[in-house]
Image 1 (spheres, rainbow, N blue to C red):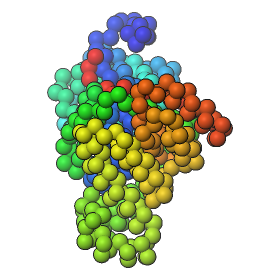
Image 2 (cartoon, rainbow, N blue to C red):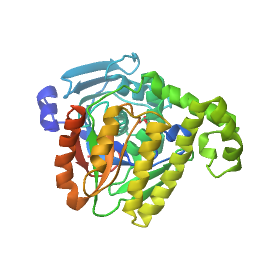
Image 3 (cartoon, rainbow, N blue to C red):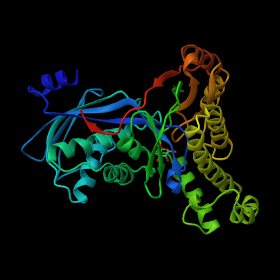
Image 4 (cartoon, rainbow, N blue to C red):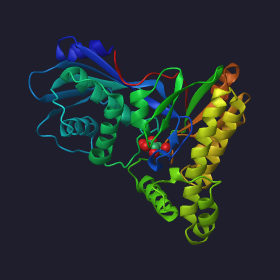
Length: 377
Ligand code: GLA
């Protein structure tokens, strides 16, 4: 399909095809920019780019989904608000980092719903980086590329996001969740529980990341870290002297900052417990941790909306559901549920019906498979 489209658009076959996946975060929300822990999986929805080298420095990119193209020269990049800000941002960061990159003709397509909290933008960034790597012949270094793509997103696109999405899209392994220490960027791949389906529940409500709420949460977390006198909230535990001594005063004087900190610190502890219980095959406890994470994001971090809260309720009521929580930045987008495989068929039917009845909205449901990080096909 992609090859055919390339052929009819450029009148020749593509030489390379690259891909990069979206992700769903199992647990560890709003912890990445606090140097904390996250546990995402790459999903079987991705961005694909078919491409051919050019002998000049022009990038010609046709988006099959938007039915529009973008043509730009590597030496006169132009920040825009459009979809091509991502590829242009990645090109810019690669050149700033000293990579010698070359022009190409390409067609880009994808099946990650946009703005749903499944990292469609990180997938575009990593697929673009991978495209430049095959075309320009430089060695692929997943962690380096993830950092560079995050920089493109922060500086070029203007979203102050953490490193989770790019690392998940770059470095995941099929069949595993990626336990990432966002300070050291060390990864441990944790086998996914057996006989359990990971189900993504899209509320169909959207709210852009660029909006101030995300950056506001970030600065509240930074304020909390300063209060505790640590580099980042990762350095505080709920059973520490620091927390015991400082948090009472913080609660009195800066209640919101206290709540944000309590979410991040407890969420980090939930991630650490999640990987333990996954190793022991205790799916029931993993589900409880999902639920506790949602409650904390709802009450302390305040990044859920009604649709997410209703969706999570509808999911938890179903037979075979171990737990459910919002996933991604929040304010809309998707929830994720852990469901016993033998109940998943009914789950997929019942949740949208219950959700429609209670919210008046339509849900999209994906039973997802885990996939591997960015690669050449
Ligand atoms: C967005 C950001 C990530 C992370 C999550 C919340 O997806 O891009 O860096 O902060 O929100 O966990």
